[in-house]
Image (tube, rainbow, N blue to C red; front, side):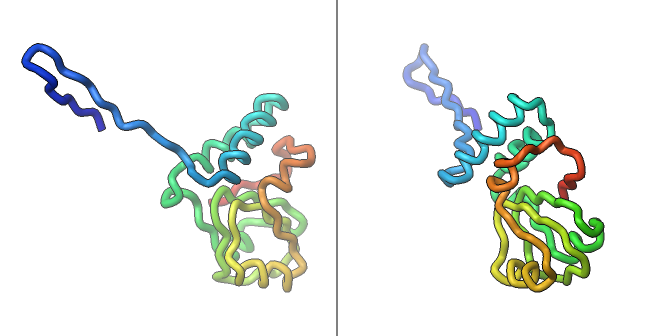
Length: 136
């Protein structure tokens, strides 16, 4: 929001509202890592994840296990730049990397012999964008 505040009859000062970005320190560190690795390795998928995670929390993606089950195949890697919720079941093994998980979703993922990890754990390895699906 941009406003003009009259200071005197001849002078006006323009005030702009600054975008602050995420306040979570872990998220800030993850964004720096994603951007650095994305630029260094020329990996557009990492830059896309950083862009998606920079959004306000109410605009981040929320994905249920039923959607993950519907749109993935056995052995795939799925990245959710947001939160994974527990609605639905998994009937095949997938690797799910997300910013957040609900506790019930983690329990269901472990029961289905799938693997859950944070996005920061995923980017420690070599990420080229092949055989990785972004959902949400």
